[in-house]
Length: 415
Image 1 (cartoon, helix red, strand yellow):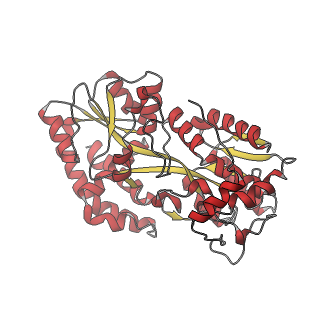
Image 2 (cartoon, one colour; image 1 turned 180 degrees about the vertical axis):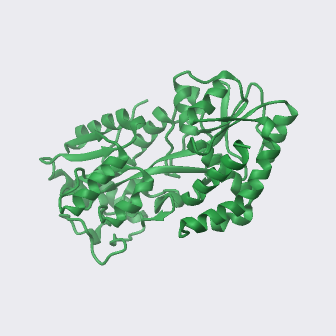
Image 3 (cartoon, helix red, strand yellow; image 1 turned 45 degrees about the vertical axis):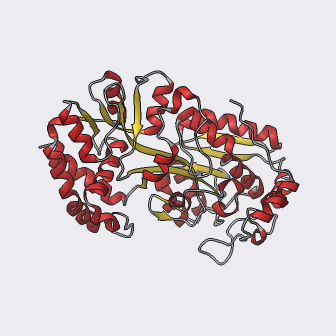
């Protein structure tokens, strides 16, 4: 499949301007922008983006744009895409595959020392965005409002990173999704609800592999989804990100009570595993018929022929939680316009589709469907777009999730 990023012509920019809301950029949570530019940021919007940014970015071809990327599964892909951007625009990009936490500390240390950050654009872990924002390391420009390719983002992902509201300064580049996977050679139609899933397993003497929630994110995500399904009255508290640790533990204790009772009653049907990979392995070995997994992990292993071709993912009708990570432009960059052009490139059709095709990494763009965009031999390892958009849910408060995972291990797995 060919993938090509094309910078729109100025003529197209004027067409877009006629159809796009003309909201000009405003600094996020501040009186002024904290990043230097050669253009008037107050006049920047999605309709004016190409006309303003492209000429200014082309003046920066003597400087190398530095892009740090923390995702090892995307390193090769982003190396190739950065090279393609350079070929098509003439703007040199140095792509660095880095440890996310180490790079975060580098950025914060640079800010504290009054030095520029070591990169211009950083694709990093979502749970570090609060600290990076507090350190004033992130350009306080709402990228999600001015990048043409970010016009139709999932609103749950556009302005928040795991409960932290950043106002759109961090663009949701990568999305992943917890799912239940099943063997369609054994199960013709997957059950719709959590109770129906285990009723089916009991009636047909099947096993459900559940990842230990303290050992893998597919497990902790599954427990979060179980709380949403079995304790619906807790939803408001589960999404209260202002809670301190003590309050979060109290919410977890209350909201986990029906979850603990549910899984204790179904202990004989469950095989608990100690990692995301182990849960996938139960499907490969056919020691379980259902398993809690990450959709992108399933897709990646399927592309390598490491799971049966009959395995399929699905989402429970009550919803299952998903997550993701984003990128931002550093406040210290001296190549803002080039960084903006590169940011728009990263969210373009070509990059987002290639990312999905290669790794199963979903897009936050609601206007970009997967149907027909990836090989037919792999499409069955992704949840259909309509089901994904209807049933995905944001991750809950992380403190509650951690406390719930500990309770689950203590009161269900260990007993």
